[in-house]
Image (cartoon, rainbow, N blue to C red; front, side, top):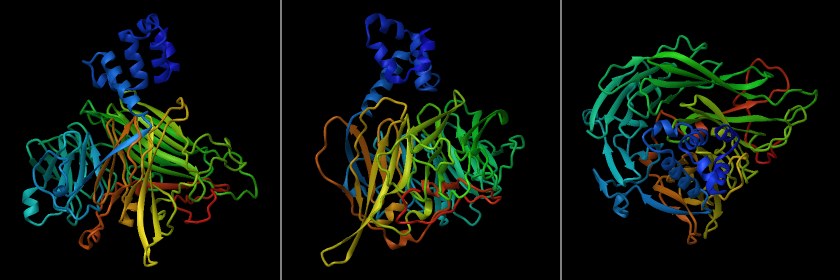
Length: 536
């Protein structure tokens, strides 16, 4: 009976039951009951740690839960150039950097960044170790690379030759390398356990295990076209299983015609031993149910389809979205919509690989003026806050936004700089609780607005920038006043080179208009920046 009651509880409800009395603690704290509670609140945690007693796992998760309710923050700033600091106790080579303008990757405590297209650096944040990687034979021939994926065992690089289909894989503990060649160019790569996955530009998926043969995944039974085509928003995203190498999931975002009851559908396909064994779908409903003649109010769903880990036990974020006008959120939709009034602005859809189930999380930001318009959001306007990135982790959504200021300097000349702001949101269906109030970070380089990336795990909120990385942690006590300032400006030789793999939040954004009239041609990129947008 107690396990049945747990279905209606959240984690704080369960904590309260344990604290009522000794008899309640004995009843709710039984091994089987606590295991069921952990299954409900942290799906995948128990099977990922089968040898640990549920009480131990509960205590660990409780400490993390309480930590992220601290109302203040502390920060550690580590420049990429280690001649100026001593954060990393062990490093395989010295690093002298004039700025890092390229994308960053983070997984399992490893932050990957590039000193150049010939040298890749892996920072183990938790152990304070730094190592340099480069495939020696290719590097000696003048090879150039982009980091594509990272785990605690493997580093995957894309060779930047003409075909963009040559892959280098490093086994980081032994520093051995293997080279693979895909039949066509790489779009993105994944690794979490031992199995690696590669999605090519024509939508194919390939898998690889160390020192074995590259294998093509049979996609003939997925029920829709898998390559670039109008019915899909991008190519497949791969969700590697954190425990079983012979299991993985692939997710496609499928579009719908205008006036369809659903705006889009997430289709998750489970593969085991190379064969399809299950399919699950989750649709985002279209609120425009009864279009009225003459209603010309613009409403769009701004959505990013990008799979990111949301905990360390099998949960992935599949989509992050909000309803908005041209750039600003809309909590009041037009009279044609049902529901007309929204409780929150941000929504996150997740999928857990152990329960094989979706979850939807709704949030309300404190900033009604936060703008989002994908790649065009940063082109024109200054002195306004624009979304740069978002990361959902264990129920919390961290929004990273940027403002580029053009204040007048002492000589009456404009002085440009950028500020990065962080906001942590709690789901609306959870009890109100304190969240860390993150202090902003300032950058001398106004181009930071297009590069801002935020990562979160159980220990840190991580914000890398041009000159270094900021590690934020929640704290009980208020910090000393002061602004963290990255004074680094990009050197000209680094700025000119762009890399093919796209990891920025805005690069994967789509804008789907709620159409009042039938239109066979879907416009998912419409809308211009408007300084006077009021959200309507």
